[in-house]
Image (cartoon, rainbow, N blue to C red; front, side, top):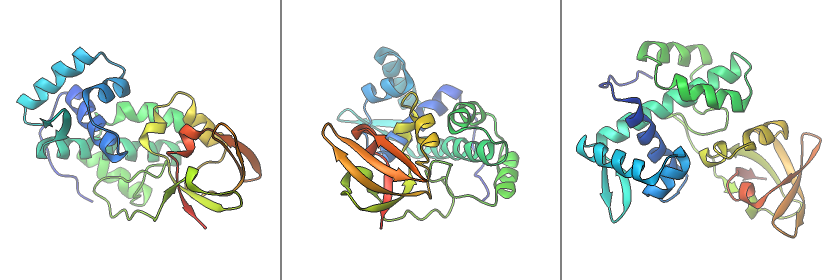
Length: 223
C-alpha cells in the first residue's frame, strides 16, 4: 500500500478530522458536543475549530451534523491509518500494552512519514487491522459478520472481532479488556446474564464480568 502524498496540516486539524472519522465509524452522531467529549475540550473551542475547518474546506455542517469534505476525509484516513499502524507496531514489535500503545500512537500519528509508513507495513506483514480489530484505512480489510456481545444468549459461543474506538477512550477499559483476554481472535462463551446488564463470560480459562456499556459495543462473531 503506497500512501498518497498530501499537504501538511496543523496537528489540531489532524486531531479533529481523526475524531470525526472515528465517531462516524462507530455510528455516533457527529455533533460538536460529541467532539468536545471525545477530545476533552470546551464546546466553544470546538465551535471555533470547526469554523476554521469549514474555511479550509475540510468539513461541512448539515443540520448540526458535521461531515468531512474530500480533503478532510483524506486527511482523516491518513492519520487514522498511521495511528492504527503505530499501535500494531508498538504492541507486536515492542511488546507494549494496549493502553500504552494507544497513548504513544497518539503522538506517532503526527510524525510518521510516508517512507516510514511503508517500511512499517512491510515489517509487520501488511496488517489490515490495529490490535483492537479496527480496520487500517487503505488496506484490503474485509469486515466479518459481527454482532454486539449484548445480543447473545446464555450458552452461545463467540469470538471477539473488534473493540471500537469509543471503548479505547473509556478510562481503564483497555487495560481491563487486555487482562481479561477480550482480544480479537479469542473465543469464549456466555455463561450468565445478571440483572443490571452484567454479562458473565468464560474466555481463556477466566470468568469475566462485563458491563452493559462494554457489551453493547464489543463486536463478536457468534458460533
